[in-house]
Image: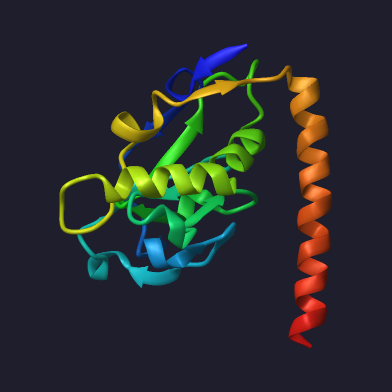
Length: 174
């Protein structure tokens, strides 16, 4: 069935609760790359102004700036109560868990075709640098969404391919 992405996911902007925190892990756009999330531990009073958004496991982090730079990742197995992310990262959250496996959406959004499309959207925008927004560039994209069972099969195949690529990369790096 066809859906607009905005029917399946939301861009969350819930503010991080800094009460009872001396330090947190801050994730800026440079700390997210091609599926990996790092971050830097900072004292709360030393955080930059853009350190505002809270996250949950299962969220997709996707940079608003230059999609082709691959600043995206799926939040998985993080101690999210101690992570705050930049306002320049979209926090995309599943709002239809009965229809959508968020990992399927992650693979869809990070596919070469989507990255190329989003990059062209970013470059067509007036401004100082190529940027996208959820409302203007993502929410109205149509997806022909298979049933959850089929999504799982596709995810399993893509995960297996990703694992092989990681092994090959490790072998080549040594």
